[in-house]
Length: 202
Image (cartoon, rainbow, N blue to C red):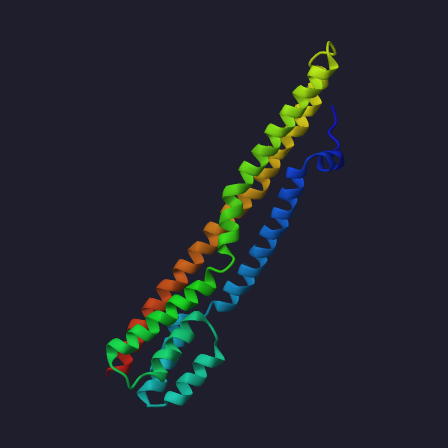
């Protein structure tokens, strides 16, 4: 028994929805991959240069160095340097608020991957249920034609479940991968904040 994939797509609107979901998921994955890759810097080397500038009171050079290496870490550090004349608690709060803004940027598009990872299996299951209902309706109309007529319909219906899993599994893997990278970057920001406060209070 051969399954005509093109014919299945024509007869199952859920597979069309899953195809659109897969395109959206791929778009989100590529966008996040390039964005987070651009955000990555060597935090230790970056903070060593910042410490060297601050030791010489070269604050403008330190800000310029932050702007030369754009990333969530450098953006938070730059805010701290610019507001260095404020109270320590004020500097900390300003950097914390900037960190939250940067985290929102890093988590952009993540909701799409998470939603598709959770919803795609259910979309596929819905398509399977609808397909099986249709297959049994065809069996009822055929009268005494036997179960052979419904076998092809059920097989095609199960393709929807497989399609849902094909979309969901990569989405879940990508979501967890990016969440891990965001968590690491957030920790690097926290470390940079504490180190900068020590440098400014010397």
